[in-house]
Length: 502
Ligand code: NAD
Image (cartoon, rainbow, N blue to C red; front, side, top):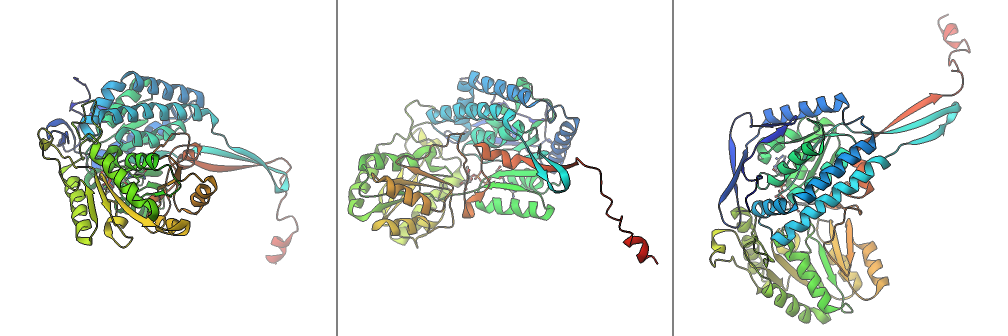
């Protein structure tokens, strides 16, 4: 498929397609073939400055911020329609840029349209409060857009995660500067172009490309942003939080995960094995909420490992544009190294590799970065592969006895993004859901993140929520207006001020 979203791309600032100030470019690699499919601007602090100034002008002009909520909603709905109309082309770009199977990219793009439609509807439901105050005052509590929002997003769900932030921010009337990951920016640039086509005014939604160090870091440290929304690793999230703390400005961070997928002996074991495979191998395991730690009740551990191993072996690792592909390419050579490195660490720690544990070197996959779906069994909480985010198609299996141990193991890492519980006992499922420290719990299912429900973490997985009505909290601020409904009572009428002066 020939697509206009490949080739030499430009930043989008103030409604214009512009080069980076330094006129430098980054090459974009197709991780499945090693080919260069596009180039993007290599932006730096000057481009951040330009984008934030444009966003501020647009915000102050009020063309978007003070437009009616239903007008904003209609425009976001038009954007959703454009995304649906170009879904094939966008999915193709997403697959070439990120390496994910085309079937999954289609799911992402449909999800992008869902998110836009949801927040299009939300725009007209954002309201403040009135309340009686002492002294006969009427309190009018306004819910206002926070102002200029900076978004920094990752490469694993490029357009989808960016839309999680951009859609609610725009619905509230803010102006936005988005900096996607340089490893997968193309669909985000497409989103910016489609937004202009949908009628979002120039300067309201700007997209700048570049590396984290050169473009992300100056964005995080820029006082012109009233709020920064970040999704990415815990390490970088911490540095973004530090930069915002210096400025005393709010930040929302969605970070890494090491999600447990708990399988009790009373679960439907075939369904649990299918769910465990889907939980880790979707998007090659490059998924923040991946069920990367299977915790299984000892009495069914052997049967489960057998089923999970068989499923992992049977998955089709194919070029991601192939309709039959179930496991695509890893985003970069560096990420592939990291994944393989962790499997080596696991081997040294004494865990058993029941399948996978190696790169795929058969042609034509040898041109790209492919890794076999991998199952590590005999894993204990003290192992690094149990504690650290691998971000690849590698699942660890740890056994437990009883509910208390299952919950203790689930909570035994620094992360707290999501979790799964497989059981036929609904009471147990709910008890576990309440005791697990995480922002999301799936019961007898995994991985679904519909826009209707809030998504986010606890502990080192971050705070604040994407999706659901809760997302609006990130992008609005409250202002109390106190209106006197009775004549003003002069505080100084008792004459004390005069008598003090002698
Ligand atoms: P990353 O932290 O390396 O990069 C994320 C973004 O931050 C990119 O746009 C990058 O360019 C930018 N960045 C890098 N250095 C920066 C700096 N010093 N200052 C400011 N910005 C900087 O993460 P990644 O490798 O792109 O994505 C993978 C990580 O994202 C994983 O840890 C994963 O769990 C996490 N993630 C979390 C969620 C969630 O919702 N919790 C969703 C997707 C991914």
